[in-house]
Image (cartoon, rainbow, N blue to C red; front, side, top):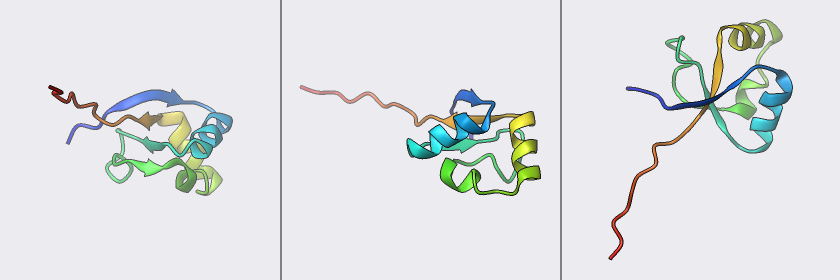
Length: 71
């Protein structure tokens, strides 16, 4: 399964903003974090886990946009 990734999150402030805007985040480099998870859940992880996620890369998840045929 290929995950769609958007903007990279580099700071706790950006992660807090994603949580307040009800976004999901992914970490494609990890087998257990490569599925979309709510940013509000991720921000409540312990500090050493958050540091590892932010250093290695955490991205905002984007859903696939489908085109609808309207007639």
